[in-house]
Image (cartoon, rainbow, N blue to C red; front, side):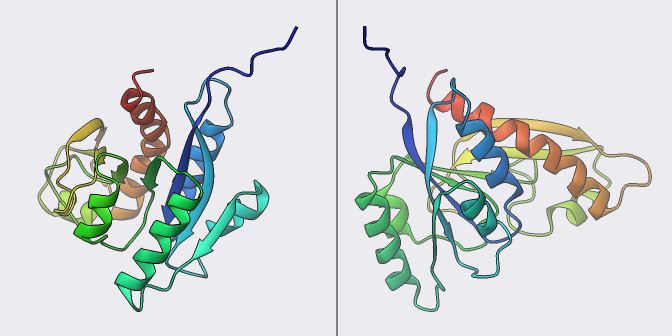
Length: 193
C-alpha cells in the first residue's frame, strides 16, 4: 500500500534584513507535519544578514539583492519566486518598502509581522514611540501587505503588557517572543487550519 504523504504544502519565501529570528521560528513551524507551508527560498537585501545562516543550516536556497536599483532587484525577485512556484511571501524584519507593482503581482499573498498593535505606530521605532506615549500595552500584528505602509488587513494581533521600568530593549525582547508564536498562528488562520 502506498502511504499518503498528507496534503501538499504551500511553497513559501521569507524576506529578511537582519538576525532572522522570525525566519528561524517559521522554519521550525514549516518542519511540523501539520504546517501548511514549506519554506523554499530566503530573500535578503543585506549580504551580512545573520538570518542567511539559517538558509545554510536548514538547506534552504538564499538569494541577496542589493536594492541599489529597486525595480531591477524586484524584477529579479519576481522571477525567482515565479520560477520556484512560490505562493506565499512572509516578510520577517525586511526593511525595504516593496513597490506597488511588486505587491500587485502577489495580491493577498504577502504577509508581514509588525512590532506594534496596528494601526498604532506604523513604520520604525515602535517600542520607543509606545513608551513615549505612556501606553499600557504594545504588541505585534500580522497583516496582509498592501501598497500603504503597515496598513493591510490585520490577520492576528497579540497584546503585551508594558511594565513600569520598561525600556525599548526590554519591550522589544518581550514582543519578539510573542511574534514567534503569532506568525505561525496567523499563517494557519490564512489557510483556515
